[in-house]
Length: 347
Ligand code: SAH
Image (tube, rainbow, N blue to C red):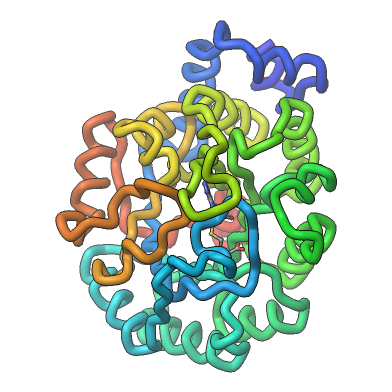
């Protein structure tokens, strides 16, 4: 089954269900996923510096610690100067991609976002800017793109409409989120989609739908991590996603999307102390160390016990570099575009 998956980059729903629900293929999956990753990307691990610039959010996603209704969250916004300071520090440390992530915060108007993006591009023309600020209009996405943002991360969360409604209030829709991803792609962004593994009410069939949606979208990056509860959300008593299933899905995705960028996420590092290392061995090839000022890190608490939020973790890059090296891979200081783009640029 794994051979077929590797060769044809596809499997039937029935086969995917068997693969997702059994642990007996995990070793074979890891060997093959790692081989494909070595074939495509070698031992390289790309770095993205994550700048969490606002935890204000107008949305009320049931799983998320910075949801609007969480009155206990202490809210903050970074200024343009703060953000540029993060980039300066990041640039000196070797980062060549900055990911600006935040809640959906109306304070950051399109004009402000464009100003921030263009000022980063002006100061650091050899760096890529990625935005991860939620659902916006085609027009807004177009404006950010023209200001110099080339990449956008917007996990679709779940491709199944009923499941989507179990994770979000009625005013939000999965269809709109999917439309945003297609808009972003049509504008020319490199896009990242993805899901939380083991989010409440998720079934194997939902994950298969997610895979089918991503086959249609053909994203440049796929971000997955286990769902982790947050104590001040409606999902406080739900159980965490599984480490094993997250790793298995990473392996499947590497074989189905050989050239996609696959991050070993912070949530994976939170659910197990060596989660990110295990992810990298299962085909992941990107890490996103936290580059936010230490003073705000505890406030961008999407789920309980998020790692890299203490004073001791000021420079996540050193820790990540050592972790990546310990398993025989190498962090590189490069923009790290998806292979599709690297080939386009060479041609
Ligand atoms: N406002 C932006 C950024 C959201 S935070 C947006 O809408 O895209 C980034 C990602 O963190 C989310 O897409 C979600 O998949 C993940 N996340 C949020 N809460 C989580 C939780 N409790 N457990 C695991 N992942 C979570």
